[in-house]
Every structure is written in C-alpha cells, then in structure tokens.
Amino acid sequence: PRPIIIDTDPGIDDALAIMLAAASPEVELLGIVAVAGNVGIEYTAPNAAALADLLGLDCPVGRGSSSPLWRTPEYAPQVHGENGFGGYSLPASERVLEPGVPLLARLIESSADPVTVVAIGPLTNIALLMAEYPETAQKVERFVIMGGGTLRDTGNATPTAEFNIAFDPEAAVRVFGFGVPITMVGLNATHQALVGAQHLPDLMASGGPAAQMVAHLLGSYSDDANADSGDTGMAQHDSLALAAVLDPAVIGTEHYRVDVENTGRLTTGMTVVDYLGRWGTPNCDVAFDVDVPRFRALLNTRLTALDSRL
Ligand code: BDR
Ligand code: CA
Image (cartoon, rainbow, N blue to C red; front, top):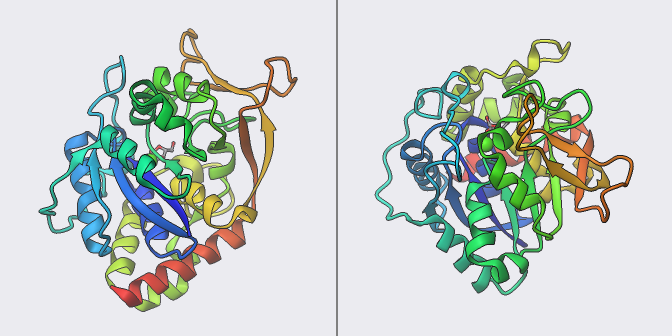
C-alpha cells in the first residue's frame, strides 16, 4: 500500500475522507495531522483524534497550527457546525496528540517508501513543514491538495477564492512554489462530486456506527454547491482528493503551472492556472474531469466494508 498522511481540518467532508482512507487497502495511513480551518484547532484536533478512535486507527494524531501564517482565522461554522461535525458528538479521545509539524516530518523521514501527503485543509502546516524541514519536505512523493479551483468554479469563500486557500493564502503561495509535485483537486472538480445518502444505499442499509455518523454528517452539511445544480447531494471535496489517490481514474487531470494570488484587491486566495504556458515548468496536475458514478460507488463500497469491521 501507498503510505499517506492526511493533513486536515475536520470538518464534515474531512471526516468522510478519513473514513475512506481507513477503509481502503491501497493506502497505509501513517498519521493524521489537524490544522485550524473549518473550525478552530480546539475542535479540529480532538475531532481527528475521536474519529481515529472510532475507526480503530493506531496511527498517531497531531495537533498542528492554530491560525494562518499571518492572517486572522475566518472559520466556517455555517457549513460545518460549531464543533466541526455538524453537532455530532463522538466520545472524547484520551490520545496524547503530538505537535503537528514535527509529526509530519517524523512520519515522512521514517517511512521506508516516499509518502503522499493528502492536504484537505488550509496549507499552514504544510508551509511550515517546508520552511522548517525543507529537506524532509523534498522527500514527499506528492502533495494531493483539496484546494483552489479554476474555470467558473474558482471560489466559495469569495467569488475567486476557495476556502482552504483563502484561509491562508501566504501558506498556499509557499506550497505551490516549493517544487514537489502537486495534484490540485479544486472546486471545479469537487462541485461535480455530489453525494447524498441516496448514493450510499449499502452503507445506509448497514446501520452501523459509520453509517449513523455519515447519515448525520450528510444531513447537517450545508454546502451551496447544490444551489445551481440539477444533481443532488453535497460536494465531497475532501473525499474526492482521497479518492484520487486510491483510484486515479476517478479524476482526469491536465498539467499546468499554478500560482496563488495573495495581494489582489478582489482576488486574494485565487489559484491562477497558467493555461498559456508563460510561467515556466508546470508544477501541478489540475483535476478537471470527475467520474462521478465511480466516485460514489467507491465511497459506498468502502464505507460499507468499514462499517462491518467497526
Ligand atoms: C474545503 O473547505 C472546507 O470547508 C472543506 O472541508 C474542504 O476542505 C472546500 O472548500
Ligand atoms: Ca477540509
């Protein structure tokens, strides 16, 4: 299996992504590192730990950055609820959480095979890893990032900026400029990846603990991706990034250079894709196409199998 680390701000769609990873034999989950984002670190870190307990994961959980590099945090409780899980409460974990950025470095260094880092929250921890442990960060095989967007779907936090990038644009500038391969799974892709309970029939029929949590999370998750779409369900941004690691055929990508605006009057936090090839070597596989039935089937099968183990 491919060794992965998930850097995350759970977060409703983050929770589904972590469940998907836990249920998938293609990956070995080396660790989970929390970052402030959807809600504060005082929620995202305990949420990550409680979810790891629910899933019976024996990997370490880290508590990373409590705020963006420079900016004041702007959380999204309107989407994820005050506690990040739409009010769903898991038993509190008694795990001791390690400092997040040193944990990232330790896990990357101690892995026999190069690690894929799946970053599904703001990029603060990743930027700090690159600043504080540059040689370690260079050993990462690839960063698969849920963040940004292109074409019509450039933004949800602002008209041109996606939440994870808008939360900490200075971190994103550093990460996209660092030089390790990136897969960018942005809003233009994730807004196609709509999932509701109706798309997870086997899971819902199982009635187990994961099914109960997923049903609650889907019911309490509000994401306006639905508003102008004929399709129903909620955009599973973070699970799509994870699915792209498990089964690359779920997305179709094109190779471009991508940079991040952090000084624009209107466009701060925008991921700008160099379609014209003016900015030198491409640094990013940018997701455009999504095989939606394949993605939904993967979630349904994997989470159902997970539930039979819990
Ligand atoms: C991203 O922001 C968060 O609200 C979600 O968890 C996802 O990672 C979508 O813009
Ligand atoms: Ca997230």
